[in-house]
Image: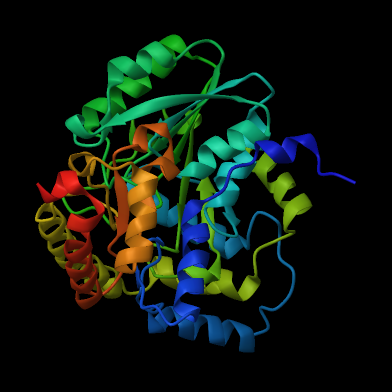
Length: 395
């Protein structure tokens, strides 16, 4: 007996693998500071928890439509219209268990074997994994530190072709904390029209409420782009609802309908009581969101300052999300080697930049979704062991 050949093309998300290794070390009595997992350490706001409890009491414990409860889809449509400045109808939305199903379903619905998909590198690893799984051709788009962790529009234009069926955009970005500038978005929209007329955009905006400089901009709001864009957003990062498994997609009805059919085959529907809580998240008080965002800014400044003080490290200040992506080229060590050593020797769990693609070599990703005291403890431990790990950094 053996697995299907297509299974061999699946990748993984290294954050969860490192988390397992870190938990194993903790079970042996070693203290670990977790800066590997992209999960807010805050509790889900009370008003949202209360809404879920009331929904249970009100009988929202049964199956719902595969695309989402009508009232939840309406709330998503209203929220996206308000935050992106584009009119959205409820039937142009789908509610799914987390953000990943939007990626999975979009690629399943759009990509035939051999179709080209342009995706960010370094970028969220599930993009490339799913492209490979369906037999598409991954076309990596370099994301450059020298451009403030943006892509080069001219480089993108060279990568587009009539074979391009999908362009994946992630802004604000994981792992870099970068944001695509307005000029980049506008050139992307023009290039798509000129060079890849049959292509869609998957715009992953899961960190849209965690922008620290300026306002969030969505390519969805550009003229003519609503018909060609599938927006991905959700509840995990903004409202600290990672365990609730709630996300949504917004796009043309023909694509949403196709994704709803996949949802029927995959998970039937999202838990009804959780969808009622999602309405409260979207429409209720937002002061908790702003409080979390302000705390992330404080943590960002602490970790950036601390990383830049480490020998061999150079860390740009991220514009969004809760990640830093420092260069470690000055240490003389490879990304995976240093990440492994920091876990074993310093008790600091982080991710090698190569977990996000080949262009991540020479970088590490740290999540600052942890307390300032834990971040400071991690920095102190790293400062202590780095001279031993890296002779080049010690000099």
